[in-house]
Image (tube, each protein chain N blue to C red):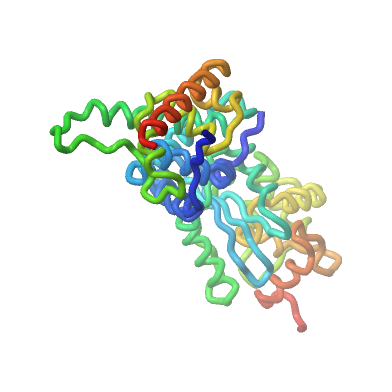
Length: 156
Length: 201
C-alpha cells in the first residue's frame, strides 16, 4: 500500500479542514484544533493501514478534535456572566443568527450540518468523518436542519 | 429553508499560516522523518532531502517534484514534509560551492538510499575524490575492491542518490570525454568546468 508524502495531504486538505474547524469551533480555537489534528495525523501516519480515503480519515480526526473542544468548553466551570456565546466564525458571510443557531445544536448534529452545508460532503463521507453509519449521518443532518428551521422561524 | 452557510475565503491564507506553525511543532517533536526543500542553482532546480541522520537525496528537477517525493515516501517514510530550515546548511554549502568558495562539503550524509555492498563502496570512494581532479570508472572499481567491475561501478554512480555532494561527476571514461551522467551530460560538463577539471570555454 502506498501512502502519499504527508506534505501533499497537508496541501490538498488544509484549507477545507481549516474551514471546517472555523465553522465548528470558531476562529479563536481553530488554529489549535488544526494543529492538533495534523500532529495527531502525522504521529500515526506511517502505521496507517488503509489509504483509500485519506480525506475522510483527516476529517475524522478533525471532527474528534472539534468534539473534544466542545466537551472541554462544557466542562470548564464558568461564572454565569461569562457564559460562552455559541461558537460562530467572526466574519461569516452568512447570517450571524444562523451561525448562533448552528452553535447551539448538539455536537453530532452540529458536526453533520457543517459537513453537509459548509463542506458540501455527501452523506457517505459525513458518515466516515463522524464514525457513524450513513443512515445516522442523514438523520443527524436532517434533525439539525429541522431545529435550525424552527429556530429561524422563532426569530423571524 | 435552504441554509446559507458559507463566506468568502481568507481560509487559504489562514490555513497556510496554521500549517506552517504546525510544521514547526512537528519538527520539534521529531515527527518529520524526511524534510525537503527546492532550491535554484546554475544547473537548474535541485530538490534536497534529509533525514535526522543527514542529507539523503539530491535530485535534478526537470519537472515537478511529485515523483521524487513519492519515491522518498515509499522508500524512507511517508512523513515527508517541506522543511527549508533543516536543509539550510546543505543549501548554503551548495551556494558556496557554485560560487567557487567551497571545495569540500561538510554536511552529514545518510546513505539509506544507496545499495549495500559494492555500490556503497563505489560511492564512498567517489566521495573522496578531491575538487578539481577526476578518476576513471576502472580506478574507482579497483579501489572499491573489484578491479574488473568498471561497468558495475558506472551503474552504481548512475544511481548515486546524492550527486554533486557525492561527486560522481568526477568519474570519467579512461578513453577520454566526460562520459555519461544520470543528471544529463551538460550538467557534468558544467560541474567539471566549474572545478577547472575540464579545459576550454
